[in-house]
Length: 394
Image (cartoon, rainbow, N blue to C red; front, side, top):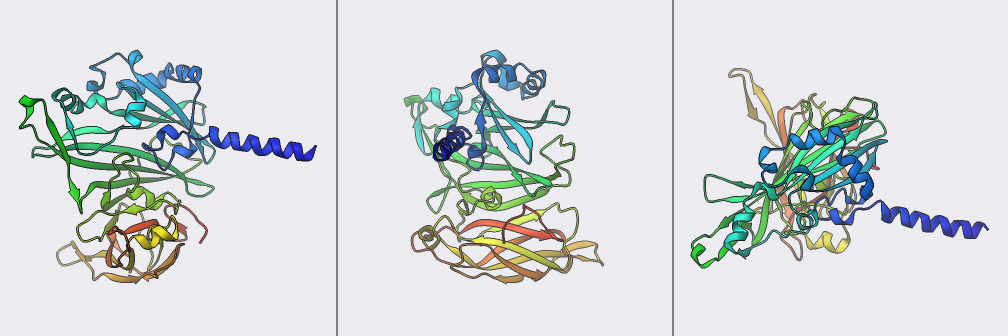
């Protein structure tokens, strides 16, 4: 009887694991899809009718409503639980959502009609994130567009993608990582009269590159969380990342903070170097700072040695020039990393009470045997006695 029970238990766990994944979102939310469960059709309809949801939808840019009424739009609802808090991701668009999930962003030739459609803001997917608060009410914490079209005053056009990664930092705190990446392209309209419009994405090293950054907010679980943004949050700017045409966030900077060594931030710069800058820390670091890093593409040994690894980082900071009351840059502090280490290595250095923003820049790498991409699997900083971006097994 015990053997039969254990078999049923194993099967139940397998079914549970399958059910608590949303593979349709794998390209859109590569760091979160495995934690998401889609609501049933009846549950989605009930969720859609809630006043908090209708109010949130109405707050979206007016141009979103120019094509269809709210009731005629496409929507889906997914849920996840982090630190005992239940979150809902409500996705809504004028287009069938599956079309947005599977869209590929690469060089192509369009018809005039397709080109005009591409420029419509209404074609993007809007994500509204709610949490269930202590009063058992839905609290909206974020509204962001995915694949929103933009155009500059110059020749460039492009798409901006947004993602929210929710991460338990420890048993008492939760973190929100709001990541934005942007790709640019040029549209050749010289053959418009022939109904042929080529689209070329901007590249670096013959690969599509994306600008990327993160806004990070940290909250106590017991706090009344009303937004995924925080005025006391941390802003993280990083060098351009490699862009995957099917999965925009696959190599973005948020991979360095997701707690999963199998994913990596992969740069796409001319010199294969990268820089990551942090600003907005409310308190100052003490003299001793710990940087914890999993260097390289740590998915497995093959990809680790196939890609570039960092062996020297510079820690850059500022000091106050009292005579002119301005910030001036200090001499960088050299940090040496060991090669061949596929797990966390920690370097401790004297930061002399840094002022303002600070950054880490690559100074020396070891070339990969297959690719010219420099990678970081995980990155963390210790402020006082706490790791800023979540606890981990050192």
